[in-house]
Length: 92
Image (tube, rainbow, N blue to C red; front, side, top):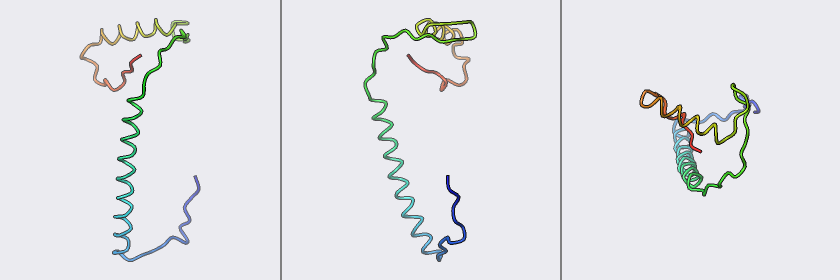
């Protein structure tokens, strides 16, 4: 990322700055709405069935995707409501 050129930066009156800031906030708001809409569309994309049985190298040796999912669901079930950060979940 290039460093900003602070020697030739535009300096304006407070009223001009306020107007520029309001215009920027409008663009930021548009961007936020667009990002939310794109995220919603991404979540609504169809899923693809995973046919290949991937193999992972885990701490206990090699483990296939199906076995890892079964283990993960079992771990999650055993921990129950004590889990404080459910945002770390993933679903397969």
